[in-house]
Image (cartoon, rainbow, N blue to C red; front, side, top):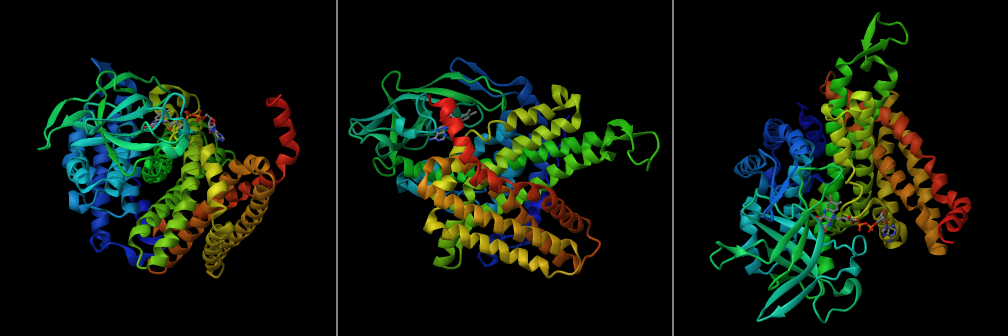
Length: 595
Ligand SMILES: Cc1cc2nc3c(=O)[nH]c(=O)nc-3n(C[C@H](O)[C@H](O)[C@H](O)COP(=O)(O)OP(=O)(O)OC[C@H]3O[C@@H](n4cnc5c(N)ncnc54)[C@H](O)[C@@H]3O)c2cc1C
């Protein structure tokens, strides 16, 4: 059985030490002992209940019987335990029965659930997003009708955007909503709907994008609707099935226990639906959910990477192969004694810690958009969140795939054989750079909308804050932390130059700038990761003053040192790719693919 132990110490280190504003923590969650208890309980549930089902789900998969999806054995029971444990309600608002935990705590919990069992936890990810949309755009009546049962987990939620002809480009969406006798009816086909059907929750609340008959063309003419799997009476009890049919479930590369459904709305009389938000205002409402979902998908990258790392580390301790390269021990050694295996494991570990810190820092910015102590603080948090979200989504998911691949490499041939489970992590990770906006789209979002915010000044402000933290490292005693700080300052300066050049390229030649978008977002991820590792090392050095033997804190500084000497250094050469490569490459691309 693959084991999973939630990395609670590191999650708590990030939550307790790396926030940009500590004055804004909700009083309910300001007690570190309470937060620790929450994570310890989550750790137990994930190790004992969710993680063992990860392999079961991968092997058994799901089935479609008489138009209904059946989850793998054990999933419904785990779902009931998840609800009884109160885990479904952690993010929801108190008014409707939720616990309203701050977003960085929710993010840390999400990391644990997805690491333990991503197929199971996707249900919760989509439900959390649907709850946010209803909280933000629903009428009082809609909130009362849907939120208590969705927040408790009795009902779950889905997000229905994609259609066969409309993926990245939602302007091409065709599903229709028609007003008949005072209520809306939906008609159309949606594909790839995650947990579009399952037998764990009692009802499923679909959020569906569709066009009204008089809608303008393109993305301005899209409205958002709520359409439940089973119709709901005035007293909240469930009535007959709505006119929504599960046409099929997709056969996929990974996340085999997550039902990815093709749904047909309105085969017969039309699927009953309610408009949520303004007519033609659907995309704006859906983006509330998608931005948070993007952050959570970035966190999924951390989850799978952590799971792959734990597995690779355990394997490397028991696999005996080869001799010590410097003769420091005799006879056959465990592969963890080889420098190249150590390099792979440290590469995994240091990136994971950087990804975790960056994604939970971003989750805290999300919290500050609502709860910062001043309006200015809220605005700044929103700008930081806007900037960081595509970086977290893209960098953490690309690295999630890379780290899962390194996990296989550590296993050698056994990694390629399904029985170790290393291959499952790689297969499961592969969807992350694709859904919730492909990473190519994230790179363009960073270039077109985020780098250009306030003519580049928001990006510059963030880089200046990174420099300030790195500068603090340079005045710490000893060599290790100042070296980390100097490397980060150098990297931030190079990133600053690269961003300036890219911005002017964007003004002069959009095609050339677009060519640099993906290497630029990679560079940002690696360098922002370096900054947050420097911030972590600095904090660890402060904490060590009163606790100088603390193993975790000493390891944190060493891990930051490894990261800045390897990952950070190798990312600097991306500058040339971003700003120079197009000069030679663009004509090759044009000639190869356009003629
Ligand atoms: C397992 C799974 C679960 C999913 N869950 C859901 C769900 O719950 N709800 C939902 O609505 N959807 C869901 N999706 C859909 C998912 O969000 C889309 O697959 C994704 O947004 C990409 O759309 P597409 O597949 O049509 O690819 P396309 O849009 O056809 O893109 C193909 C390639 O072209 C690139 N590309 C496209 N447009 C541009 C452009 N303008 N500039 C540069 N490059 C571009 C893309 O980056 C990509 O590399 C899911 C998909 C999968 C596979």
